[in-house]
Image 1 (cartoon, one colour):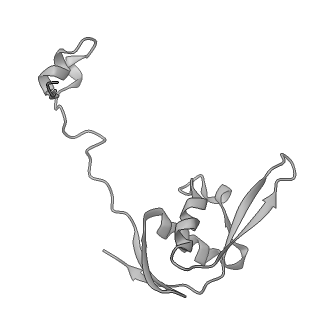
Image 2: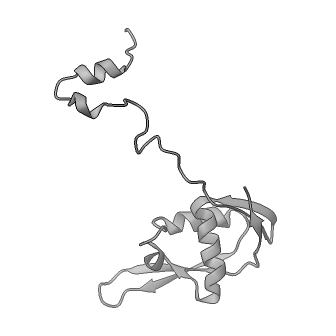
Image 3: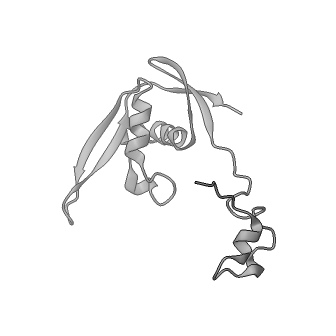
Length: 128
């Protein structure tokens, strides 16, 4: 089997393609634009120092700020916490004690999780 290469000429000559849309093929589109840097923080917990990045770092900060009232995905999901349970799971891997409290929905049935951080955590700073 002969490997195929994709070239700008092949894309322009393909059936049903508008050649005017390929003014700069492969450059400067929304997918190759420079992305902003992920947040990275260094913290100290019961198991020692650790670093977390991205949404795990944002979840850790939200847990610390919420205190004993905890956080739920519904309050954060409109902004960034679409998979809050996954971020909490990874934070537990750093030795943090995070309780999951099941709260029932009165009006529609079912339940949601509230996460409460019990471990003492100190944010040492952001990592460049």
